[in-house]
Length: 360
Image (cartoon, rainbow, N blue to C red; front, side, top):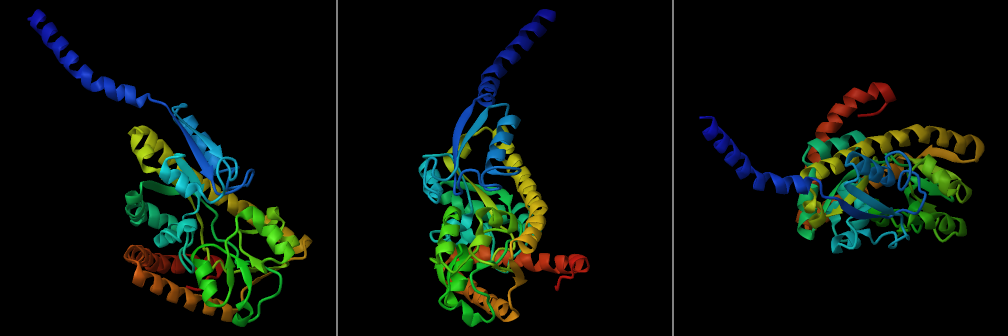
């Protein structure tokens, strides 16, 4: 009996080895990837610091025990600033860090995975992507073109921007030359703004020399670092154009599919950690920076006049409706986004108005 048990047990163990061995080998396989970036070397949040792309790479390396190493290249170090989409799609690099609305010219619905004018804040946008079907729509949009994407950061609400002259009425926008990306640029254009898309490093010299009259970038901390307060003194807010702003981690789909499941999970967890860490870092540094700009740099910080806000809201509604009418993919994403926003607004308007004096 013992001999038969031994023979049977040995046979079973031998039979399982061919199945188990390949998965063990695959789990221990190492990968060396490259990540490019739309932003220049040393940029806080966008390149370096808590929750940044370089922080993401470090997190992945640590959690994977060195099995997935990602070499990061800021804009200009390997490819120009806004060529990451093509580089990832072609397989030249495996990853890119940027904002999906940079690709809105070729994929209009991509805008919704960065931000939407008069759209949701950080909490709503993140809830929609993680729990409201947003990620599935993102996958549906990108998979046919060989890409995978997910959030890897968020600035929170952004400032309307810097203006060389004060704004009083909507007529002041007509003929204004302004740096602003994404759908907000299309909205401004309907009100007569001459929209320019410039990388972050080109904003200050263009504003200082009068090549542009106004510029939107991020918020007090990042804007102060670029020195925009030295080129314009009128700093407006409402957050209408970017009530939040998602950093997109773009991945080549074939490369993504090549990863074992545990490394995919590590990438996803690291990206989520960076989303929270980057957002909270922005919240921590913007208050001090805004106070410094007003108290020590002679900046006038104020809310856009109500008439301009209403004109922008009407123009946004029209732009979204027009785009959706000619693009079924955009309409599908838009309808899903707005349905979630309606429910989130009802909750947020009731729960946070007493805290901040918000109007629901």
